Length: 170
Image 1 (cartoon, rainbow, N blue to C red):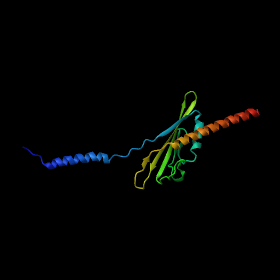
Image 2: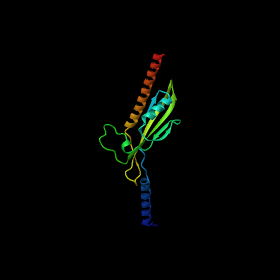
Image 3: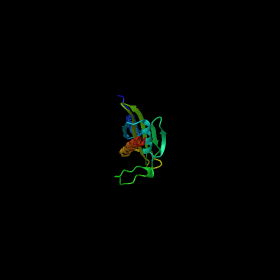
């Protein structure tokens, strides 16, 4: 009978092991699901845009395009980072994030604007390592939407007060 050399079998097994492990070695880390917070404000687009800019005034702006409804911050680091009240520990020095705010006009019974806030966080461990995406807790996004709602309510109250003043003077 015809016998095959054993080195061929070893070569085939070794190549199969190498090919199967190569796929796992080249696998990249997936970005964690970036939660986004959204809320619909029933107010004119210009008022919502002004409220968003007022709520985002403490962040360094990178993109501010009111026609497209986009407001994007530059990478926020060091002392500018949002710190929740319940947080006791310090941030890592390599932690940075940016906020992406999108505004979309809509109309049902009255005009409305859907505001979406997303926070992308990365951790730079050192100069040579790739940035590692981190998950957000969603607190800062909720705070920004709250600030927008408060700005809109204050503006609405000021308009009512001004209308009362105008009626009383006439």
